[in-house]
Length: 375
Image 1 (cartoon, rainbow, N blue to C red):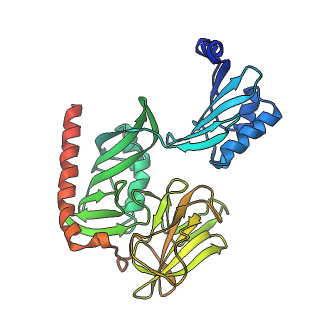
Image 2: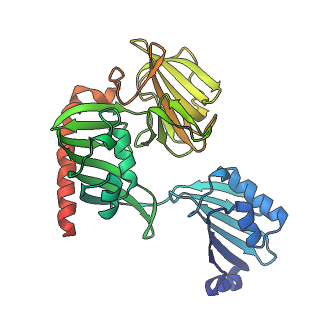
Image 3: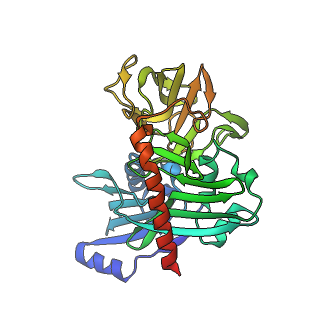
């Protein structure tokens, strides 16, 4: 456990405004109530702080690396409480005559990074040895799952080049890095992958310069966190069919329809929690689950355009953390959203498709520039 005691700077604060400051970095096994007890708060004050922070943030998601900061009066009563979570977001609480709870988005600097390496024994080892975030191995496996199984096609000697962003607040790296582009040279050709940025909802995969797969997703800029197919269920603890794909996203993130269609269902369903189900042409349907809220302006039977907000990300139903579960069904049977090509959104129009090679060229140029600057 890492503790920052009330030192000289806090003593100055005490003299200036009769407050003391206490900060703590959350460690494995810590609970908010336990940390507040260490800070010296009594049961009543601890309950007040816990309730206030918990009204804006699910305390079951508290994890190592989060940072808790308290300012307290001389009599031990809290004046403010700040919880910084993994992406730099602050849950800021003020107490007293005008109490308030705010979720403050971080003011982050986005830094573009680049790296390249040759895969010998495993992609994880290759990335780690090159100083590239190893989580990108999972990003690659998930995005390529509709084309091939990355783990089985690697035999050694494959070259990989990556372009990503990391985020910093006051010089500190916060949150997870975001991959933007990858070039993977395999035995059967060169694959180039474009991930969506914060304003885009389409990923693209090219082979030897030709577009082989495009995927329209329901959350702009979100990253896949779980693939279609058999997997170990995170709650039930046994192998079970995962009939869609998951997107990691913050609580409250906007969820949009991937295709125009008619709303077939809005409401609760066992396991799925709060969800929306859409019907489309060609006996196709889509499902958006674990939502925290629905778009109250919509109703069952209404036709909506692609890109319409239908709800917000949540963790309702059988879920361990905020995310979106997304399914595509053909004739009532689930299919892999990445592999099936029958559902296409407006971003797959001809003008956009014509622009995509220029986007790849732009990423390649940026990769070359950043790699050259390193050495």
